[in-house]
Length: 160
Length: 287
Image (cartoon, rainbow over all chains, first blue to last red; front, side, top):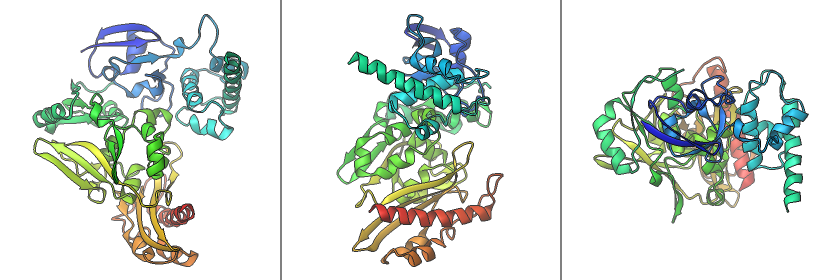
């Protein structure tokens, strides 16, 4: 089946089997391997991408369901060689150890901050329930989210 | 994990979907948000010849208030329901339930109609649908059929929807006292599914419980109305003694108690009693 979708602003067209998963389209056909495959059963969140502006788990979506949509992956976050504030937060606050969950975690954080720009610690932990990290014990991830929330707040204050 | 091969259709209208179902219904699975079906396809627990993706049918997406009825399209996502200002005003129990499902990514894809039809005995929606006296509307080549929530859940993973039918809409009567309601659950710590969940909707007049409906999920192979509790509360003042005595019967209407590694049957029955009491007291305090 022919599908056409935009990934990080670039249009991709392909003839795919209906059973092809979106995460395999992104990794194997387009070659963007920043989106990871973890549990494969919509639990761990490593495969999180944005689909039409909302975080979703790309291992639990068929590529054909994403026909005509706009996808953003981790590779689409940095602009002009500058980290996105959420990426910067993970860098500055040591929000990762092995890094496997990080790309999905960062996409989920972007979704969380979009809904709630100044979350409390409890709201951060609740908001990231769909992403599992087996290294950090989450404390540094919470710190990273708070860093990013503050940075985004400063940025939007400057823009005003 | 790769699903078995299947033929794929993505109709854009209910009529078109119904025609495809008439042709393929016996060996066809309907794909809505996909957050139950796609894992099942990948684990090869399901291997239908045809997958009918209803995600492109716009008329299945709408949420609207129609007089005294709240109408929610089968494809409304948990996020859309949780974030709807209209629903928050007229029936906050819907958003409160939706916000407790899965995680943000799952809520962005999973749908009300899909969850109900899947009939997972530990899902959150069935408890709220029972407490709200909701009706589920299905369509087939023979026309439309309206099923009461109380008749909708048949057994584990089995709803009243037949192979040639498609769920189109969920109708919820606008509650008289929208705030006098709650959904409380004990989440299974890994999946978030309800070990036991209780939804309660009250109508209180002069300190008396004029009407009450309570839905229980997670305990039995199918979600059920706790009629024994309701009967013991109706017409009474909701004092501590009355509520305690009534909610001690919260497991009385369970057809059976599920047992697994997360909780024994007896523990689930205990949780149902404790959470029914908390639910009734919380709903009453919000009235």
